Amino acid sequence: MDINQLTIGQIKEIQSICVGEMKNKSTYPVGANVIVRTVTMIYTGKLKQVTDTDFILNECSWIPETGRYMNFVAEGKVNECEPYPEELDVFVNRGSLLDICEMKTSLPRSQK
Image 1 (cartoon, helix red, strand yellow):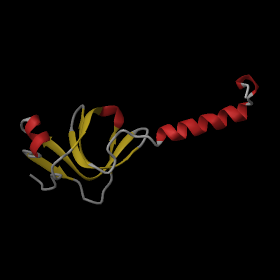
Image 2: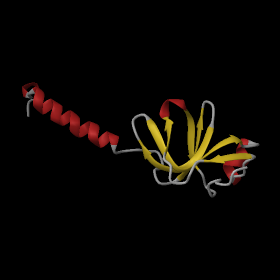
Image 3: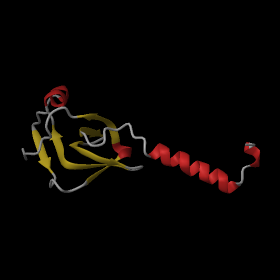
Image 4: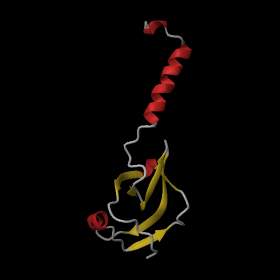
């Protein structure tokens, strides 16, 4: 195949195959319980899906106060917790992400 002989249609087809495969390869732990730290807030939840713009969580809680962050990550203990309704999908914009990690303990779900 001579790449210089490809038509615009063939190039677009190759591009759509490559982009489609890249979109399906997420290094984020979809299906796992996660801690999402943004520039202003911390969320916990089950990572349901990752889109081009958002992390979609369910069983989500907003954590306004963790206490010592290392203890929170290691033990899951929080000083304050505001859970969303369990069945509600919560969209966290990817542009606000500082870091995300798996939560090795159960999700905090009790208002505190």
